[in-house]
Image (tube, rainbow, N blue to C red; front, side):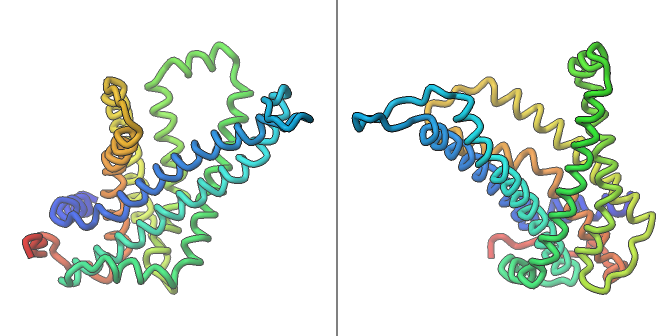
Length: 283
């Protein structure tokens, strides 16, 4: 695992093109969030007003009915939004693998070719995204059930203890990774791939938990820093959200590179990453 970590970090440090897929996926997630907020505002105005008999428009007095109508629209759209976000990151994972494979084969990384190669795998991307959503829904249901079983005093203790919440999040992430890493590696290896070994599963799970921990820490620090800023314009808020997304998703980039190496190490097991030349950005 130490060797995999060193190889992943060398690729992460030398080839900034590997940062692009995951960063674009994070930016698209921010854009979807902005669109959802705008849609909520529009729906509230649409359902919250009604035409009077005199031809004017007056606010609706039945707020519970307005909320019910909005929920009927937003719940399926929220599920679709989450599915799209997962698909974005799964596609970014495969694109990263394609770029890593080009680098290991001493080829010039070609983003257009890496993106074009994922088109035939649209079905696999969608199915893996559905599987990811199903596993997340299962753990979400377990969490909701556990919240009902706990006593109120115990729930308050956990709610005010950020360390316990952080550790619990890592345990859940470990369970998710243990279930999904084999499928992710098989997805990256393509049709007819070999069975994922227990060692590869353990290594991928450790990398996923470490990336989740780093992402949580970065998210906390970025949130603290953002709370001290005063923004006057919407474009400044959008630009800050994009920059924060790139920063917070940085550990995910390293995770994608590590999973890519795990997927192709049987094909390029003897490749020495240190011997791969750095990209000449001047050209």
